[in-house]
Figure 1: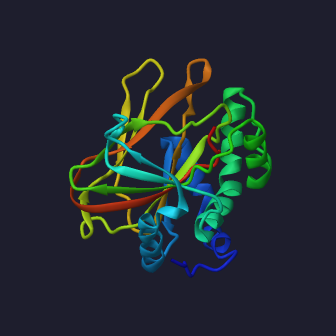
Figure 2: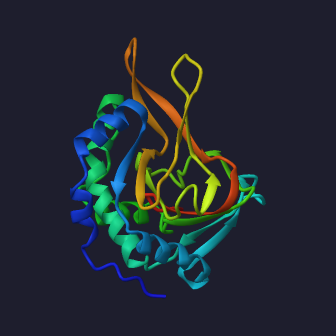
Figure 3: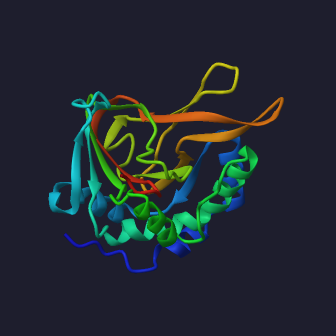
Length: 242
């Protein structure tokens, strides 16, 4: 199957976003919802790749590993063109937030200016497997709270893009984010992921103000029960896997 997205098409789309406002939302809540990035046809084209098994390096049955219920597939190399473009276009937009968070937490900020340089670092450290994923949930499926780390080298933000229309193609299946706040009970948020929109969220932890300055607040994410229909999403992780 071919996909009609043209080369270098994603950067101008992301340039239209209000990145200072998205950064403020990430700083306040650990997640931020973008405008529509993909057209409905592009969403359908990417979702339809799920049955083209030769494009993927592995398939994960979530019930088998007690991750929840449902299935997802890791893309192999080379990535489909729109997936590659999205990953490359998002990385420099998220990089200032990543570096700011590292500075607040007094942690190393190893991320270079380009995704290609960062992936070279991952590969040199033995993290050579591509991590973009295509997820498929049927009625009754769900995803347990987790973090996508895959190795010692981690980028602190990732993106999920909705490929189906909530309320029409499926019901339920809200995106869940749970933050373990310092010396306090956990806080949860629920996001309905509209078709073609991206949700930027915390991969591992984020800085929150505390009496002693800044503390790392661990964050996990998941998906609530699918009540009906079928839900596809595209996941963009910016570090590769060991």
